[in-house]
Image (tube, rainbow, N blue to C red; front, side, top):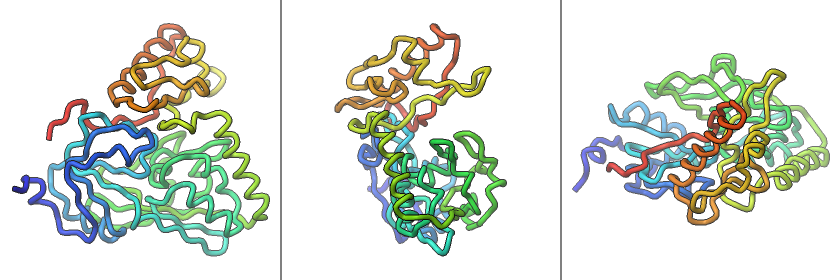
Length: 307
């Protein structure tokens, strides 16, 4: 027998799955189920769904699943996963277009094979391009807004639009998207470059990541934002280390020994373990330094399943 939510779902060309575990859709490999998981066939299918989505039903967007923690109770309502079907990447001259579901690695690799420079930093950011837009992702002195020409969206009514980056107020690790809108892609201005030099820049970024980040363990990237200090941003990892939190553990959730601002899943961590670990680190840093760290990883869903 269908639930009221199932009965009210619009017809789509994509797929619906019910009570679907989301663990494999996250880089933490942690989390409960989606009440409904919808995977669009393409951007037109998503626009149709968005224009006809059930009223009053919470909708959560999910890309590569980095920078998030899905709580053990799962996510009520509809989870929209932007993956295959919305991961096109194309280059023309010195311009590169990508859809929101494309992985950052896929985008960086196409830029390299197209001999376009300026996007090398993207290979150091795990996740999808949709998430990179939401967070104005960046590293090594570059961020998304630096290379954007335009941004593709679907509005709250299902209308597709292409707008200038200034509309979204891109700032450090954030952007402003009107309520009910979705990033669906972007166009980036790059420059002609030497393929070998581009490859070396990407190797440098990846070498730096492997040397400083615990990539051998499931993680979601930096847990906390770097707070502002009197002389500019302060390193959250250093504050965590100085507060005695290196290696701190709750169940199988642990503050990484390699990088203290990364929390890792040693194999059987629950979302509650990870969230409680974050709260304990936050309290210890505040007690030791007087600085209140702000989370960078987004917490989604409920601790207790309610569907």
